[in-house]
Length: 266
Image 1 (cartoon, one colour):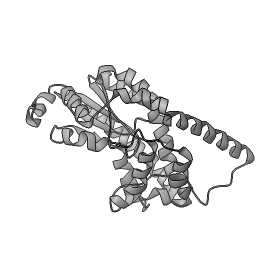
Image 2 (cartoon, helix red, strand yellow):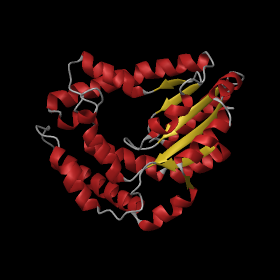
Image 3 (cartoon, one colour):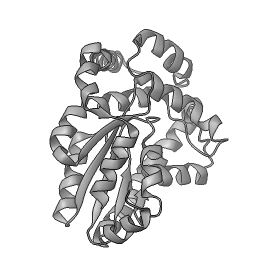
């Protein structure tokens, strides 16, 4: 068995980057945490910047209950976080540091561009994709603020659902993009259980719908309705048994995923 000390000595010979992909609450950090601790890889997470900015602006991290003012301040906090995170990432790439990019990878375009940037700077790049059901992602998000005793943020559930849809539809594209440097796993023990989208929305989305929103024109209402209908259709397809059956053969146990990550870092 390869020891952490051996891996630490060997990983220093090349620049390595690990991109995490998965919806909020999927369990990404816990999958890789035991492996990367002690290996000298720096974890970069935009949430670190976002949470700091929220606190500086005196905004509760329980964003699922945010009022209009809180949502406005949170949007500004995220804009600032995106800039400072980008600067941090660029600095690490310039220094050729070994890094773990802990995000959702919801945008295929941005993730592909990031992979290309890393590779053009001499990095070897690996993706760990942590699959989860929509229900688990929303439940973990709902409980996160309370479970962390106010130290971590809970997002608006509608945002979580959109993110889940975006990252889940990119499973196959990411598998193709990363080839041998891709591994998928899950911590969702009920992944194969049947789930009803209406029940999920009623339980996790509806109770936290924003209040005091700005009035919309008829055109804006129609556009919003069309967008929601399109998103719903996409999510129902992603939740379908046929889609899950196409994904499950490529999902390995957390232990197998960790072993493949160790091999990449060695």
